[in-house]
Length: 125
Image 1 (tube, one colour):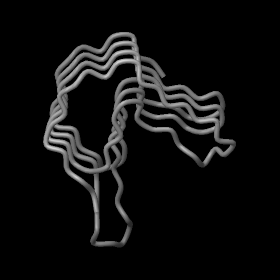
Image 2: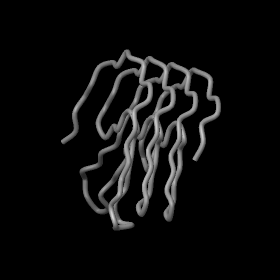
Image 3: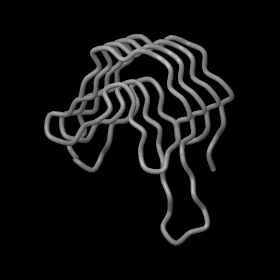
């Protein structure tokens, strides 16, 4: 079962997630927001948020929207974000030895984001 948030209105500045896990099977996701449920709208600016890892994968420096589907099952789930309005500046995702993606936003596997309005400046992975 997943949860629902109607709206998020906030600025996200300087949030950081760092993993020192010694396993490449561990993932670091979402420097400011990790969503596996439903969010109506996100309004705010995302500046200098980051995720990093020494040994695992790192996705979504500011926002990670999780999608998933169980094969052969009637039950499907996915992260849904109705809209995102805001500027993304200086967000990053990094890993020393594994895959990384989505300096600002990473939208994964069957996840949905409706509309995105904003400027993306100097985000990197």
